[in-house]
Structure formats: C-alpha cells, structure tokens
Length: 429
Image (cartoon, rainbow, N blue to C red; front, side):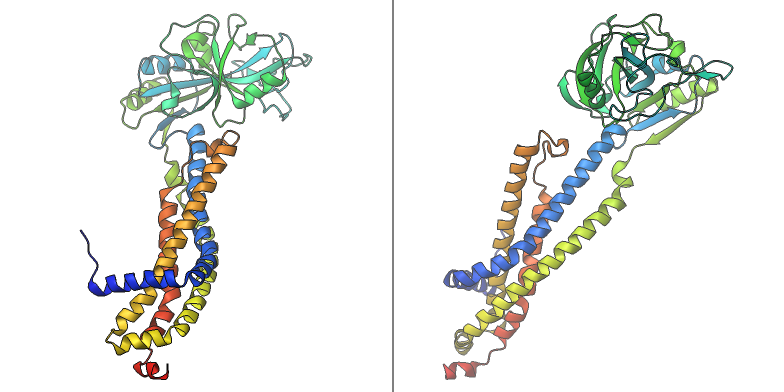
C-alpha cells in the first residue's frame, strides 16, 4: 500500500484544514476554475461521442473495421451463380447483389424514378441496355402513378455481422427458415418513408423476372443509405429471377461480397471470377485509421479553445491564492519560527490548490455526466447517435488532469511566496 511521506502527509492535512477554515475563498476559487475544467470535460466527451457517431455511420455503409469488401469490375454470364455457390452456407462471407425494382401499380412510372430519395428528383429512370449496347427507359411514355422504385439487394446470409444495421421496427430476414414464394422484404428508412407516404398495391416488378412478385414487408432498418433500398433473401428472389439475369452486365447489377478478415473465400472467389474474365477488387475496411487525422485535428481545435477558458480559471485561482497568502503572512512566519521548513510551507499552499482543482474536476465531471444522461433520456430516441451512449471515461480522466494542472499552475506562485516569507515577519504581528 502506497504511503505518503511525513511532510506530504502534513501538507495534505494542513491544506484540508485551510480549505475548511476558508470555505468562501475555496468556493470562489472553484467557481473561477469550474468553467475551464467543464470546457475540457465537455470537449473531450463531445469528441469521443462524435468519433463514435462518425464511425457508427461508416460501419453502416462500409462495414466494421477489419471487414474485407470485394467488388467486381464488371459482370459476365454465370458470375452471380459462382458467387452464390461459393458463399452458400458460410458464416464468414455474404454476397450482396443489387437490382432495380418497382413496387406499386403496374404500367406506371414510379414517383421516384431511378430509385432517387423520396424528396428528390433525379430526372430520369433506370436504363436497360440490350446486348448491342442500345439503352432505353422501360418506363418511357407511361404516366406517373402510385409506385415506388427501390434498389433491391439480395443477400445470401445475415450481413449484419459485417454491417451492423440498426433495427427500427419489425424483424430482420430469417435465413434459417424455408424460402417463400412471396419474398419477404426489409426496408431501409428512406424506402419506409416512401411507402408511408404513398399507399401502393403489393406488386413488385423486377426486370428479367418471370412474373410480377407479391412482396411482404416485415421490418425496417437504418442502413445509412440515402436511396430507397429493400433487402431480400437471395433464394426467394431467384425463385422468380434467374441467376443469369442477376449477372447481366446490361441490367445495372451491383455485386459485392463482404468477408471476414481471414477467410479462404477471397482467394477461391477471385480465382473463379478471373477464369470467366471478371476482375475483382478487395478492400479492407479501416475507418478509424482513415478518419484518424480528421478526428485528431477536430479534437485539437476544441481542446485549444477549452485550454484558453481553463487559463482564465487558473488566473482566478492564482489571484485568490495570492490574496490568501497575503492574509496568512503571520501564520506562515510563525510556522517558520517554530521550525517548519520552507518546502512544507510551499506544500501546504499547493495542497490547497490541488485539492481545490480536484474538487472542481469532480463537480465538472458530475455535471457533464448528469447532463449527458438526461440528454440521452430525452433525445435518445430521435437522435440515433445518442442511443446507448455512456459518459466516456477518457473525458473524466481529462477533467482530473485539467484540475490537477490548474491546481499546480494556480498554486505555484503563491507557494513560492509563502515559502519566501521571512521569520522576522512574526515580530511585526
């Protein structure tokens, strides 16, 4: 067990007695220092929460750090089937194949052509190209009606282990059950907004499908995508849409495979795709490293501003400390006369300012933690970034360090002045 030396213990005890004897001056010191320490705590906590929110959004759209993402530089007949067969039944890789789909009245143009966000108009629909390269809009000449266009993403497995989509309502796709003829869809927030605003019939048109499908909406997730998107099981989609159509280079198909960091799927899939003339590109997600410089710069800017506020608090505690030493000249001179060494006198003053800094840090940390808890309770449901947020421990450490630094800086000059009081001063008392 760590023990204080005799002088340090004496300085601490006398410092506590001094604080108790001069409560008003101690309170004034704490008030002048409180805002500075609070600024440091708030900045550190805000930076930690902002970093968490930024990384959380990136994880939705890109994936968790360490995830490998394979994209293809093109497509070819049989590519979709190769991808599906390679990752089938595996937990360390999931294939995501995206196609265009229109849900609603048949024979009409969707309200958001091209799967544009519901409140935006991209000015055109999805183009379909034939083998000769001639591209046409399949909805050209049709009247606008009650239909919503979405990007339909077919999944071979549960992608949430790589991209942690936040469930908003309903349930996620169940990959352990038997596939159904009526595909089950999970919408993202933008698609859910469209279907909440427009009441459309349950009929889905997918280019290349053998017939129009009757989808069932089972849930809503936050996937960070600004486009209307729906997620469906691959085997439920391929019941109506041939796998060859999924890899048609003229249909605007998206093909992505997300994988764990250490998996043989990458090498096997790259070899198979290369054999049919499809190039693949693999990227390892490292969002924290990519955003490191930006986050560091943001934190330094705000910490610099908080440091200026802290210096104002240090000036306040310095003034109070000098005034207190001026009132205690006779006391310190008398202590010197009875043999108290100069370092101990300096230690008494420093102990008072250090304890004042620690008390102030504790008050600032407590206020910040309480305010954050109240904010999460009141606004956590409406602000996803605040859901499940707890007070970051590094902000508390920063507050304690700021309090100690302020105590040292604010007490250093008064401590030197107290140690320099001559013994002869007691003769004038």
